[in-house]
Length: 97
Image 1 (cartoon, rainbow, N blue to C red):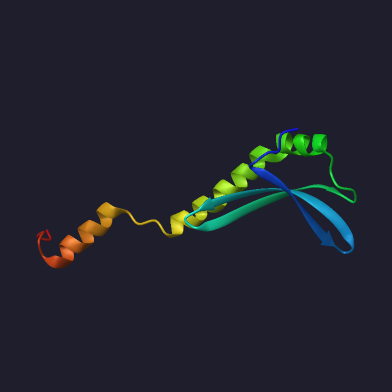
Image 2 (cartoon, rainbow, N blue to C red):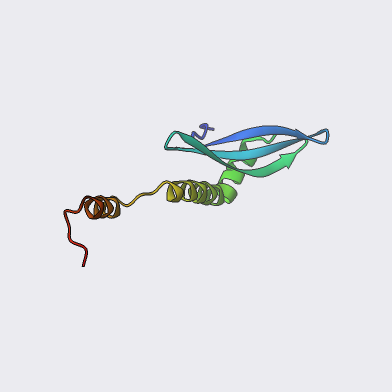
């Protein structure tokens, strides 16, 4: 099976139980955003189980990452036209009605 470049399997230990998660990471504006979904606990997942998890949960993980990226970028968004109007009004080049 060809290894998927967009998803990886992450191993975490919680209360002495090893849990395996399907992970999706997205880089945007030098920040890394992650989303994960539990595949199984105990034994490591096999290649068919990983493929099945990607098919079942891949879209949900993509949407979670997109939501995180959008919420981050909205906070830092500045509309250039609006900024230019403020600068022109404050400089006195455009008369205020």
